[in-house]
Length: 285
Figure (spheres, rainbow, N blue to C red):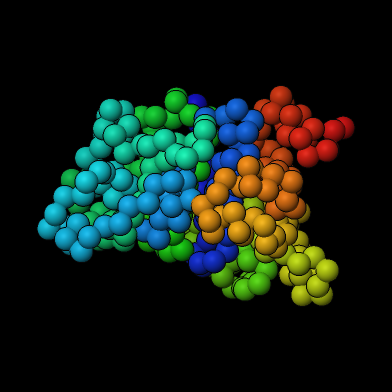
């Protein structure tokens, strides 16, 4: 049964999509079957994985039906059987990775959910993903920078939460607000989700400001802070901006190495995959 991981931060530009894309590709490299859920109407994960949908104004307003369903239709709560859910899952441009895509119309989803009184609004995503969890090893959810009912749905559907923080626009308050929100929802609704931790992205490690941020988070978050950080990497940015598979475009880049280390620190791999990944990045014991 799949392990489900949400990549979450209430602030935009922290590296959520990049994290989902690279971690999913590393898992696919290990031979795992991965499902990416694009839960953000910006649809950056969808575009990077070869599934760009441009909604017309008529589709966005609900005056016209979309040509194909995506996460927006799934979240209306009518997709309850495995066959229903499979109809919104598409093969991506990368072997081993499937996708539930998003598009601009997903921006209306929180409002549509609130007006849908026939469903338990907090567990729509969880119930849908439960029907296909046996088909995947990992499910990764790329969340929008928001604090709304979609966040609650994501937490209900997840086993683990990871939270990226951008070193270039670091805000301790933003991280605290995100973690406080997650922990509040977890407690209020008694959700058995584990916050794995916070990690820093777009790092220039030779700067004084990075060391200050790193030391501050290490002290304030303790075990909820990943010691692995993700270096700023031009090659990786180029690959993602051009919607290229990063493990094909620049497999030996520092960013890939860092995400591999982060995946190991997350401690979600079995022993065989752990040894394989360590060997791949030169960390054999």
